[in-house]
Image 1 (cartoon, one colour):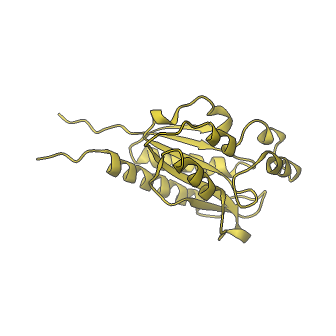
Image 2 (image 1 turned 60 degrees about the vertical axis):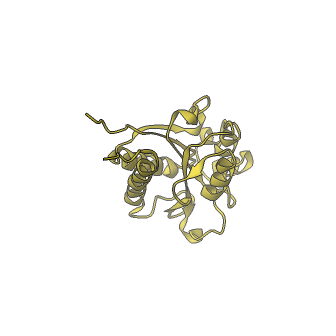
Image 3 (image 1 turned 180 degrees about the vertical axis):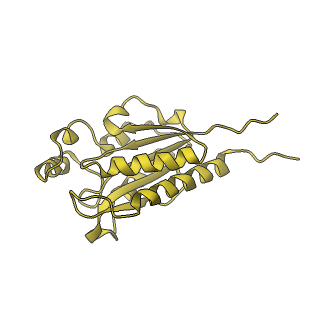
Length: 184
């Protein structure tokens, strides 16, 4: 009797105002609906977690100055109203730097960005994708952006649903790439 393969995903996110965390939870919901076992962690809780223990790594963060956050941009976010704790510790950029090269695992990246610059030429998801693929991970989806109304604003209507749907698509693509096709 064949049992379906239970694939595992690790979702790691950084958030300043809570929107990226909301997107991460929605993506997680879609991954679960797609049949994956998912661990979701804020970046500060991900230290010491080995992504090679998972079939898919999903990484998301807010776009700061057309890229991933840095200590200075996190402090700027605090000055704009983000909780002080959101600037403490490491961000995604620093966490990515700790990843051991040589993995041959799947990757997806996302970011949040404000409406007025939704069509950014560069954003956090693209930078994360470049940094992590240099460590041997393979993209299963193009870097994806989710839109918020303003720096301190809410997600645009429909974005959580879009994130859930994207999570389902990631699960399907991961299963497609990693599950052997039975030979008859």
